[in-house]
Length: 362
Image (cartoon, rainbow, N blue to C red; front, side, top):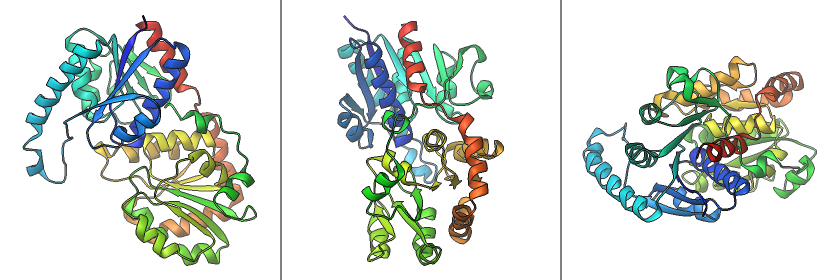
């Protein structure tokens, strides 16, 4: 009988997609492995994981609300309830090991696994480790990290630098630029800007682009614009009748969007950074300033420190984002410089390394 592994976490694409990549790599290396995902009810993992062909169970849990302290009153009760739910899941599934990928649903699962002496593994995708992962790291069997310098958060002997698992569809893509651009109904002869604000959208980026569409047109640039759900209607409305813009709330085939892009505008979540390195495209990064411990700024600064990206603060996006992007789109020398520094940072086999290590240890 195969090993039974629980993968816990989620909340954003930055946690879910690496988790799915690890799950696929585990199944590829050992087809007898049984995998169960555990996430938070109402979060996007409850849709994305079943679509990838895996089972998921949802917990009644919420994260700490930084903007409204009154909303945190019920947190201790939700944590206790989720721990009881995890006990029931363990009783039914009988895991040999658990993997935490970040997001608040990973905490009760790893906590119980560690209390019971089960093997527990952490994947920390950011350059700044979250509080929950720092606590769990003390008793984890192995901690997989994206970059160096993580011993300030975790016991040095448990750390393994693997990079972040990038979706196989992106890492192994062989779509050419022309074919990709045509799939969005755009013109391969024009320089193409891809704007992605993460799986939930990015208000400052979207507002800057909405206001700057005439400037893109004047500069003979075209745009693939993923708005996220909250800005979708507004985005479609301002782009209506503009043939140089493709607009949509979510891009399901990101490999096509990356292949089409000459320049990328993006938040600086760990997965966005990993994907930009793998696809090797020049980017303007606008970190989300309210991410826990401001980890997106730390992620972006890691690339900027290597001369591999341009960083723009969120508060400057409205005034500067469109001008900065147009300047980069017209500066082939700067593009080539950024790309040459991105190349050494690309990791396209992190999922394989992580899966292999876990299977070896359990």
